[in-house]
Length: 138
Length: 180
Image: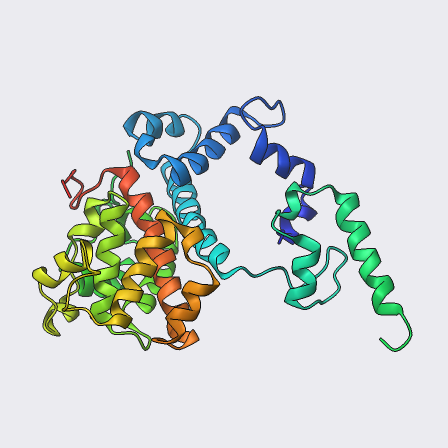
């Protein structure tokens, strides 16, 4: 799932991958953005490390309302994505926007988030399924 | 550190009504909505979802209150750990039962099998999410409808997430640190 608004504003899969896998060493993010990404990582895995000193660092880049906005957004996502994962459901649509069953979607997306997949693989899978659906009698 | 919005700073639109609703849970300490009130609309939106999850629905509110407190303690959040639902208390939930639900509930005869499954759901969700699999959900369906399971899952996700956020603020209530 991707925010259409973020995509319209130029967010790409490459930047998403960079923000997940390589934000510490990346030249693609500002210090403020790196701190927000660190905030999200710590909140999920080591919340006890988010102390007064960390909030002081955040405060050098963000206003108090912005820190609350980030904290609530991250907390909400930390809570819900673990829950969603236990439900073992997959996107309703193929990468090219075709409505598919959960069984078909599982075959396309598998266990790996689409942001971690080679686009060519996902496209090839989606296209091969289109071929199957186009066969006579389907 | 983020302090609650100072009530002397002037009225925040919509906050007074949210605080009135919040006291149903907290007995008066409105630190959480006052922190969220830094962002316009956040206190109303988040507490609206949280109160719906906690007080409404088809699952016993007293059971959901025990789950909420268990999640807050697990997250190391003294603030939500120390709040108590006044309506759950009026319905007979006492500290002994809360303690039982927050510790080794599996062997406690005061909880029936459905309640134990719900407590297990909350305790496993973040400690062992791989253990919340299709077999676990099938067992849950022997005790709850799918709608009730989603009600429990949504409650767990929402209150865990907010408890983790509050734990990072070290805000145990009334703007001061507290011990769980």
